[in-house]
Length: 189
Image (cartoon, rainbow, N blue to C red; front, side, top):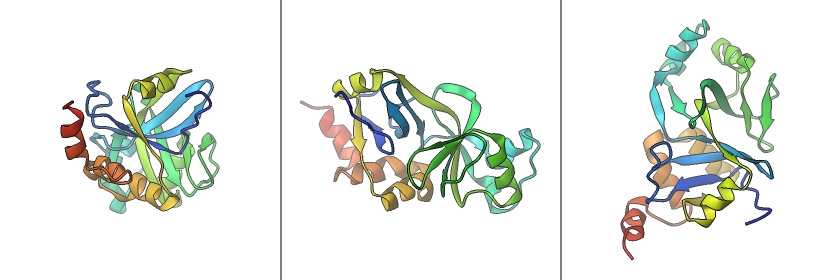
């Protein structure tokens, strides 16, 4: 498993995953290199809307965005916001994932969203998922995750176009699998 780079791919937790942070989760890998990996869980909305978050940040937000959910991005730095967005734009602190998608952690992107001139598509999370050097590769070797590649159109749909409750099944469908049936079959030898 050396030299594998999963940046821009999805991880789906295998049915046997019991870790409450990751059971039945889909995680988008934002960076993967020799130092480790980091990603954002994209299917776990928390009990907070953008209106709630922006109010805490003293940023006025109006319109259709107010009811959009904030997501649990993973168990690391839960007090910090992460914005997955498309198109790729440069903000004060942006990690370029590919030619189209970025991950920004600076407040300037939130200000732009509040003012109506931020990225067209975005997902805001609190926290992220992180793996130390070799840890994700070890988890993959122990069949904790399925890796899923997606075309840019499929990736856009999974990240920004589907409700949270449809993301696991839609990601599995890219592999030609039904999650419910896969979970049943994976539980029986």
